[in-house]
Image (cartoon, rainbow, N blue to C red; front, side, top):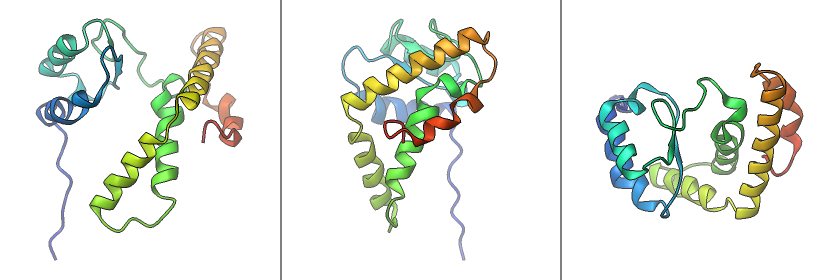
Length: 151
């Protein structure tokens, strides 16, 4: 039996994903945020982001830097991944095309109202981070899993 392994995401593969799939779908003037994973930090990636999102990207090596290991103040971590996972796996996935469709549907189901509430939550989390001098605060947010606008 042949095992299939996912390809390792290198800077070149990540650059292709950005240029061919992600960037063409973004509206004009979007601010792009990424984490500090090694494939996201290559020179070609940063050059592409500087050209595509001048002064409008957040991440390692960007004008708008983001603190490393900061899931409590990163909306992708404290909101989006859990939301997508909950919606994608609410039913059995039959094949890769079904998985892709479920992911697309989950992303499209995020409404402007939800994004406003996520923004308000981020503002609160930043206040807590400032008040604690940046101390890890994940346990302070454990109660938020029951909030319908988060999950």
